[in-house]
Length: 320
Image (cartoon, rainbow, N blue to C red; front, top):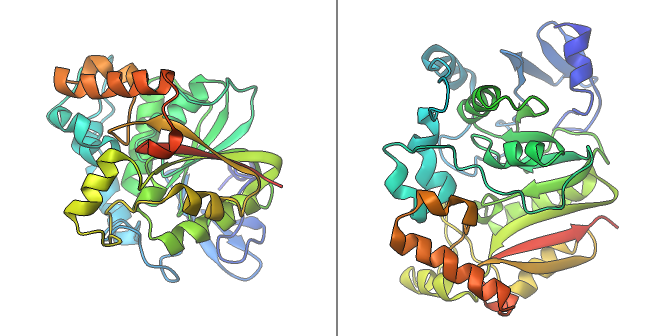
């Protein structure tokens, strides 16, 4: 590995003990002997010997990495959409987008919900194919996207290159063991990800988010509100059990404020009603009955309907 490659990743730290990393061949290693490979230029920083995966089969073990490398499709050209996006659309975007699993006319890149950036370093947790990472870069942030899936990270890099988005980097990593030095990021962002974690795993992730945020930096995390109408129905359908594996966990506003308050002063705002992914920029991709859901959600937001009744909420926490 060249020194230039290492310098590009100077923000990285050992996810086990948080010590600094030094080059060792085609890997990075810490002073305690923990070693992490660069695979095709991508740092693989998971610690699958210490924690269980949040989703079965979602680790980036060596044999899985080799299968992905052997089967990686060629980059698509022009305005075509990478087949990985259509394949994963239900898992990454939810039921409103399931009709697009056979293909779509364009990438569903959302409007970035934060104020336009000025070069702030931003961490996108659970980026998958990179829709929010790309949106952040287009909004003048310097984003780093992480995901525990090597396949997702390879796809994210491939798609960013296709779209000509240069100021974006990707790391294979887990939200519960962030491989970054203390006080690295100005902003930590996550959308549609921590809702799939157990509540204890969310608390673990929140503590690590606080660690990597700079003083007065902030996190912006989307989560489901247990008091929303749609979410109450879904909870009733599963008899109000907590949820396991990749199922969504629902949180009351007071629970969210208590857990995310570990970062610092915390406020909730409305993301949407009757859906956990209300992206008005994607109206052209949705059938009429789903389009109506997003439009009604937007009307309720403009009418200042109570955030406590929203199905999807944003949590902004400022590092104290």
